[in-house]
Image (cartoon, rainbow over all chains, first blue to last red; front, top):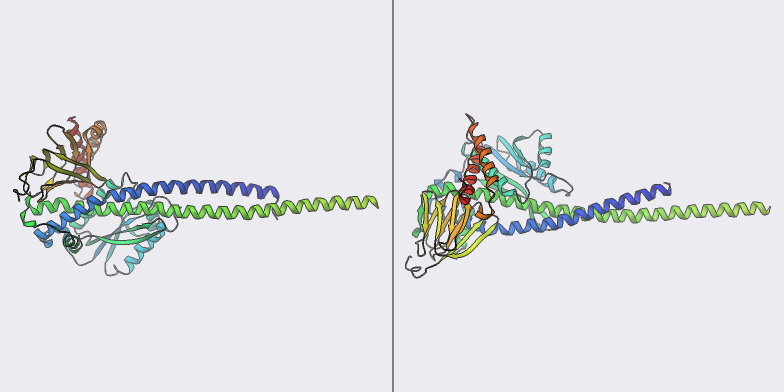
Length: 294
Length: 143
């Protein structure tokens, strides 16, 4: 049985840990709210660019633009969105597992699968497994997510145009609510026309033929399809950031609870040990007195 | 279509970026950096969709609001409402000219030593950084 002092030290240490996990829980809760705000703020832009790309592809025809071109799948590219730090439960493991599963099943026909990794955790995992990593960047924050999405979008678009990849996917954690996140695999290239036209049919788009297009429909698609790809990656990054804080919040909540349970158990052990030592001392005193009576 | 909005003397302007709607206002004119050159738009314009390049966006003639914008589009819908969608936009008074100059210098230096490397996505990234830095400097008149 550990000494009283040892138990007391352990209780103090677990109490300190609990303070830390509790603080981290509060921090993630605050950051989660901010990240959710960014997701909501991106909605009008996403909707507008989706509509315009749909409008353009409807009037110009989807076979007219290189980024709509459907090719036989030989080389696949995956943008993997993970985080730089852990302490968020299975957040990163879920993504890396999903990437491996997707590559082994849906992409089994591809001769090559290359990864563009965002987030240190994903990089650690896949470099150990010697996967083909084309690029690695640190996980973005809410403030840098847009720049990061732009750079990644330009890179995958250049890869796609140069024929280095035939299809590009993004794998990320999608935020459902604070308690649940799920991994999602989304195709970003070639841009799927049915995705965009479906949205336009729902809305009450006016007759598109009345528009003047400057410089021309083709040139407009050249400028705007990359923005569409970028916003898809931006939204995936924001979903990932939001999910990270939600996962971290849950993980820290559990850690705080576990620390509380452990403190209770240790306190019980401490009290028992103290009582045992008191009993022992009393027994010794009584024993000594009995012996003196003789 | 022009007749439907022929009576309107004011433009309803909406500036949208991925970070949110940054301006939702009414104005008598809009000056925008079009792909084919700078243009000014008046109320009652017919429906149009035009690409924007990085540059300076000015809303209104009397009360002028200046923004540095990156690429995007300007759309006039059949009701005459103007939707300006740009990937980045910054009000002129929030621009840090020194930071923009520094960005410009680093991006141009990297472009200069690009040499024979393939002009891939990273090359495009640098070009866009240069464009965005120029737009910010133009907006504050620090060129």
